[in-house]
Length: 396
Ligand SMILES: Cc1cc2nc3c(=O)[nH]c(=O)nc-3n(C[C@H](O)[C@H](O)[C@H](O)COP(=O)(O)OP(=O)(O)OC[C@H]3O[C@@H](n4cnc5c(N)ncnc54)[C@H](O)[C@@H]3O)c2cc1C
Image 1 (tube, rainbow, N blue to C red):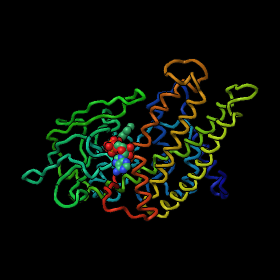
Image 2: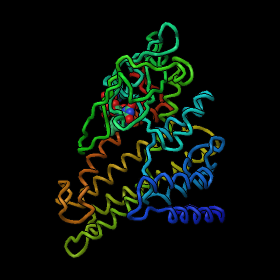
Image 3: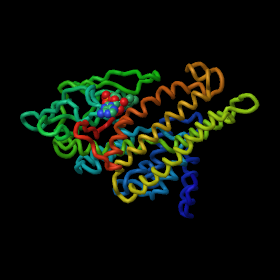
Image 4: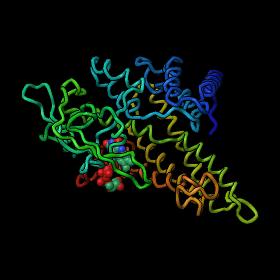
């Protein structure tokens, strides 16, 4: 897609390119040192380390087109690793609902990437139907602590995390969405046991987290008791917007086309085969259509509003596109992509299958595709549910 960039935008684009090139990782450099320096240099540029944070919290206050440029320019570049849980998910909740003491305590470490956060939402019986969560938090008699008991599942990076933001049940009366409370507590403490789950692609990123009599000070509660659902829903919208991965998909699509042109088929290449070519073309059209939806969402964010239910469209279509890309990469790699860890055939094929298997989770986490379709039907299209249908507005 070509959008008309103003002179100021073009200057900004040049500045971004210069920044990314000046601060690129140089082979042989101490990676961790480079990573921390990168964030510090980006912070010194005026909030480039936290592009999506509002100005009053130290963000750069970029316009939608500046966000667009930043996303496009950094896609496919070797940026320092970062996780979304603190910066992109908890921070917006703290900004909106945390008290000053909590902001002072948690925001600087989140920004400095000093503390790794994980997200304790899902439970064995509460994924799509998140409001069904049963992890109990009971207030002690002196009212100073919550005692937390229950099980969280699919908790990404819990094995590396320092802290968890956790949805707990403090009441069973009324609607199930009403008795939920949002708590923060350290992972490395008595009563928290983290067990690995190895996923289809052979990776260890997710875990089961068992919570037994975990003591959480009341001052670690965000907002009011019983109002956690409202805060959690806001967070999900931020999470979903971040999962669309459009810029990375654009880079991956360009790579796919290049790789397909390197595979000889008869007198031409794989890209000349009508069946393959039409799949790539369909994907490209869908991807560009999604770019416009993302631009609309960026414009809303710049006007100060939270990402609305439209973020479900980005999540749904963006993750489906990422899966289609992974699938076409396996298709292009053919036999060579069938196994992994076997460096035979073209280089791009070596990790193709692992990426494809890993990509199956994209349409599950952050809210499964079926759930996003429900949200879109109800909150974007305004379609009414039949009273017999279950209400599911939460995660996954
Ligand atoms: C790799 C990965 C990382 C994750 N990371 C985290 C994390 O860090 N923190 C966290 O809290 N959670 C995390 N999750 C959990 C994720 O959010 C849940 O897996 C997701 O919400 C789906 O819930 P579930 O697994 O319980 O499946 P279920 O809710 O049981 O759903 C199973 C299937 O049924 C469908 N379904 C369910 N209900 C309906 C319905 N009413 N109508 C139509 N279809 C329906 C779903 O779409 C899905 O296809 C992660 C999951 C994965 C796979």
